[in-house]
Amino acid sequence: MVNIAFSQVPGNFMKVDMRMYEPGCTFDGVFAILSLFRLSPGEIYSMCCKFSEWLKPGGYLVIGVTPSTDLPPGGYIHDSTWDCTRQMGKPWMNHYSDELVFFFFFSEERWKRILRSVGFEIESESRYSFTPKDLEFNHAEIHYLQLARKVENHPLLGPYPRPTKAELHRMPRAATPPRAYMLKKQFTRLQDWVSTKPNIRMFDGTIEKLPFSTEQFDIVLVSWQLEFAAGMEAALGKILRVTRKNNSSRILVIQGAPDNELIRFLNTTSGLPNVQHQGFLLHFAKEYFARHGFVKATMSHIKHTISSPTKIYPRDAEQLLISLLGTWFP
Image 1 (cartoon, rainbow, N blue to C red):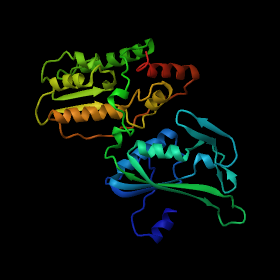
Image 2 (spheres, rainbow, N blue to C red):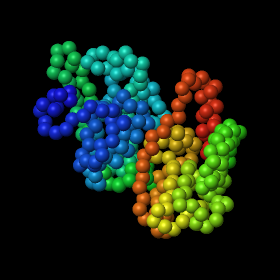
Image 3 (cartoon, rainbow, N blue to C red):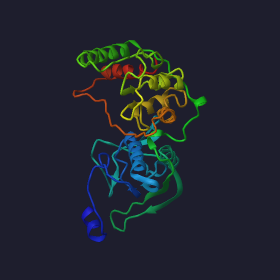
Image 4 (cartoon, helix red, strand yellow):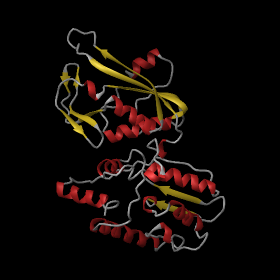
């Protein structure tokens, strides 16, 4: 297919895994035509976020999919966490693939919400029935197209629209026994490492109680702490207080991206809307620091996966889930 395109259209063509692709520039348009159903729901959200990052402001994205509302008769599973349809195998040229993998399909409305959540505005949509011109492989398939324009410059500050401060629910900083054990092990390892670095200090308490002197650090790293702040301005003010005021100073804030699968699970199962809206926290911090001299801000999308080199049994998976959820739900 790439060779056919190369022979007929002038341009550069590459065959790459789009999940790993880094273009090194921005584009006026991105097309994703019938190329996403093999990805997991989390990967689909992540790719839509990447599409936005690849585009210039005002750039266009064209999505071509088969919607879940037009799937042929068959055995399907509804995934309430992602509001999508799972299908084991997919018909292709009158045959089902024999791979033991799921294919994922969203409805038209869910696709609109996904694209809006990463900063797109839907400009048009269309659907048509495609039937191959072949005597044997001639089953009709519905194709659904969306044309979306990028209207938000920073997809990592989503999902959009962002809630107001009054719509958020602050999470208590507490630990279940599994989380306390997990954090104790991590903290002990870090303490051992920090003890060999005289210029590095560590603190695992609340931001409002930072025990450091004024302008003590050139670089401050704040990792997964903003959601526990009793007051965002007071907490960010404490961070500013311990940071030196010079051109080489840096404040690094790590929070969840809009496509974070654990955050997605929490937000869809907790019963509290926007319980973990990471984009609001990052946007608030970015604006606050800008007002106080840190005007140049950059954002990076970090890919991190929790995995095990060995088989995870149900009991182990349950303990891991309890430990992760204990971070937010004591």
